[in-house]
Amino acid sequence: MEEYWDIYDENRVFQNRTIRRGDTFNDGEYYVCCEVWFQNSKGEILITQRHPNKKAGGLWEFLGGGVLAGETTAQAAVREVKEEIGITITANELSLLHVYRQRNYFMDIYLVKKDIEVRSFDLNENETINAKWVSKDELQVMNENQEVVRSVARRFDMLKGEL
Image (tube, rainbow, N blue to C red; front, side, top):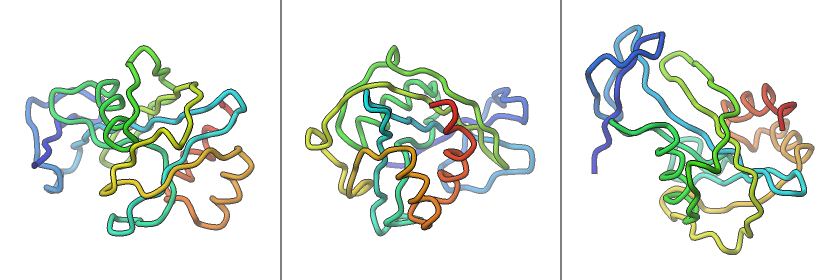
């Protein structure tokens, strides 16, 4: 099934058009995506490992993805968590941590404080091959060892003090 994304300008104003995921953007056009960071009561952070056949395959990341046309980022966050690890969360559990703007996208980064067991996950075999809880220090070491998607590592370095 093809995915379509709404197009925004640099001020995140909807431009009344959509594009198919994978199509080329014009200069000054942006799409919106989300990322969900889980933190448990021990202060550990949930990371997932990308399927080897995906871009940056085998590397670790946070949950998330593109916001589909007509969706809010909160709706996309709830959907992505369900799709990637099979866990149901509600929009009320999401706390907006940061809005991040990059070359052609905006990313809303959400924090969910929740204790969930990795063994209860139903990993989407096309997306995620593993999941684990790590301390901030462990994640920092993984970043330094280049085991984490580079853009994810940059965002973690930028925001780890807010956790």
